[in-house]
Length: 393
Image (tube, rainbow, N blue to C red; front, top):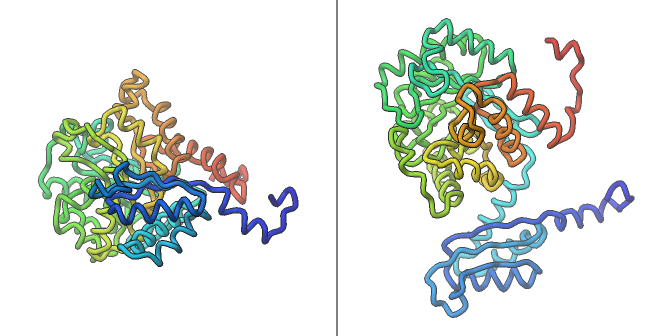
């Protein structure tokens, strides 16, 4: 519109008409659904509801709104004046629209922050375990672990994610004492070198000690559901937390891969855990979410998550994507675990374009270059292109 000479005021008026959204509301009463449908139709949009809503033959219904941003904003204003609890529904719609259209989101750690917009963050995986599916046993010593972490930082990692207990399918648990002995020496050394450290743990005792030794983020695959003390630890230290979707435990999670509506379950679970974290005293800006690729998901389920990842944007928190070398890539490509780099990079590219903003990876150098290229496609080239000297540095 600017290029064809449209008046700036006109651009402002017309721009909200250019963006179309489909929003799903759940658990509406027939009275709520009927009012929403009539209001939406009066604004030129659509509202799909269950067949028995008009005659009130159903107790509750879900509703799919289909409209432009301008129409949905007007719907919010109308619903705020209606009875039957519709002002609360209006607030939820408004919040979802704000989140889905936000270009920039912040993630605050214990002592540092990241502004996530044009540049995707890379989280390098550092497993100090004997049995992780890809790199188990390689970085057991403090020296080898620190050396690998420093290498990943040189390759472009923004965060190093240290894990002392494998969460591969079928993995058992280890004691807090054993996990601490694996993780803490590495966390302490990396933090002393000024590296941003995340700790992959479900145990509050491990999180407590790691944060005291300099960690910034707790990456909890149970979304703080396994240890009732975890939320208090994270809140008290003012740390960031990554909340992931998973059914059951790593030991038997792959026995629970059937879903009636997988993305709805993932969305609702993550939304509930974000609300729980906030109620527990963790600021919203300290929360990221992870749909849990490979955690109680089939190959088809993992592919669907990547394809529909943009649906999580309305949560308003950075989305973490962890596909690195996972078995579903092998199922598609026929490659063994150490030959899945190309497949991994393909999933990362699709993930970024669909809303992933933090990538958890083994192959940092290749992931960084892939993310930089996809970010350039998504947002345009960096505002200040790197010089050859800067590239060498």
